[in-house]
Length: 235
Image 1 (tube, rainbow, N blue to C red):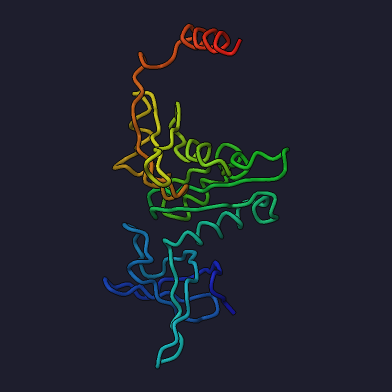
Image 2 (image 1 turned 45 degrees about the horizontal axis):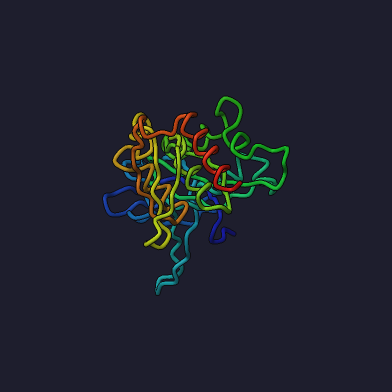
């Protein structure tokens, strides 16, 4: 029978404002509470979709099965289903955060130097990630490389924005300033702040995005001068 943490197929058989009821494969009934729904997703009668089994609540009227469409576990299970390297353990999913139905970020790693963990998850011409995205109502899924070095991980997490530098804020716990070029600012912040918000949740660091004006970028001459000065100091 179905266990907590399982991916299950279900059919919506009752859909009213406050209640969406789902019939699972073994004829059991489950509840999809409002907080477990994807915002804006329609649950028309007869809709077939995949759900994540969140919990079984014991009530006086017997067990109540609670399922979810917004839980990060649903995305994890879909990745396992779609991507053999994840299923077999070659690629490890380190962290998943979702703003369900809109955007998600997945941090992955591998111990196999011959495997590109991001490329494998995205698939040829994006085929693998697109099919997962479709299953989640078009949720956009960013796959990034996990790193044990928080500064590198933060840089990766802000993808697709290109980051120039990451500096820890000394007087604050787990906080950084991230510098980007002016033309990457809106990408780094994301629509309504979504990119930076998800990156902060993914890395568990507070991220403040700053613009580094082109004239403040070090030129080759600056770097060369700095090198000469450093050598003079050392000699």
